[in-house]
Length: 425
Image (cartoon, rainbow, N blue to C red; front, side):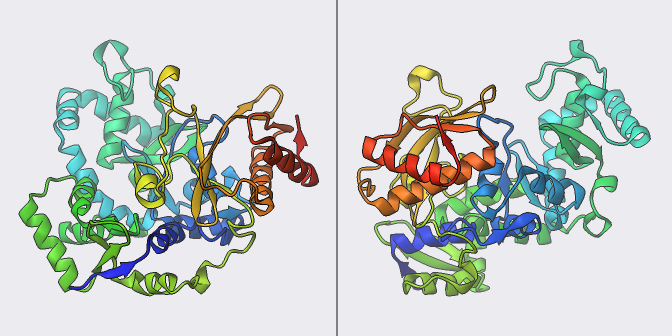
């Protein structure tokens, strides 16, 4: 089968557009948060709240007038989504029947199977407490600290809750702060989704989701991603056979990207989008409801699938490393650095920090790419507008941008911020 040749610009526009980040925010308000989340396929969650949580920065980049309570509402009030996994993601609730296979196989892993076998009384205690009391968190159980030594909890009951969550017997009912509050699955999952798909249905679903989530992926990477989803190993022979079947069924198409020697794949249903983008047109359904990313930059969340895990380098020729877990002396940039999206390119990084005593947003570091149009007033305006939106989202009283250089750019940004009612410290 002949590959569809596309430019690198088309590839990155497609990847960002599929994720709802380009060419601007096309969702608005609380109700559109669910639409945006479904468009994304999955949203990675993280507890760190240096300036705002990664998931909220991600949604801010997609939804006009977004507030963190909107995400809470669609997930935990409306039950439209559920969060799950050692690497924590939020998924559409409609996917739960397929995830039951993943959960079943997770429960069969030695560490969880052994824990359940060695601690049957604790498992029973936790399930009975939830049955009687309803939603409970780790702090609601006294537990036994002497019997456990696990990075998943300091008490036997904490690890039991986690094991039951991994196996799908309990789900996260809601969160207090970022603390998990659990309940029995039958009381959390809507009845229409509280069942298990067949093994074949689940594996067929994940064979497509592996590609859908990324938009474009290297064919040789599919085996690893798919294996992680279905929680079993695939040998090369089976993986090749499954890929061949996906081609034969017309589910996927091969793609060649300008400058890459790798064979890439995309879902066949996305061919019209790729062809339209490669012709230089923006799909009608992608037109932004507010400013485009050319008019106003977007601060990209640290765990965005478009830029995390080395994809920034592959797609944008942009180096990005999340350095929160690196010692200070080993950091290249900063603690909580965010890439900056301008138009269809990542052009800079900034390291924001919030002083919660004075409610001042400090830009601790700022790094431009060599080809960034730093002297272009259009770019300076876009950067100032993006910073103003971010500052208002975090609800700061003032912004400190002394680290921004060159000085001409800093001066221009200050004017934009003041014009938009943001106090510059």
